[in-house]
Image (cartoon, rainbow, N blue to C red; front, top):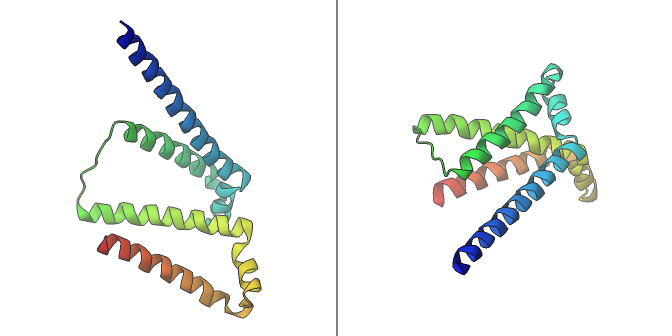
Length: 143
């Protein structure tokens, strides 16, 4: 009887810790999107002002769907062609998110000015993009 009670208490503690961790991560994600105005910046960069509700709905739906699927250890068996498409779309999203974040906090102009590279902004951007692409390809193909 004591063993059963300790198992139930242990399971409840695990549930509370899992929920607390999920709330902390979710709260951080929402704070990131809200405080830094990520979605409005994405709308501004893509010049799709009439679609702001679609962006918000896509973020919420994506978080809910993929979190739920992660709970059930769901696996998707796709052809290599479809994984290329999904990877391309995910890369576009991450790239636009990074561009919006960079625009919000003005990282590149400040960094270029401090490094004395004001006239070389295009080269700086090209080097960053090329480094990201080559690093990703190296990780995917070698590892």
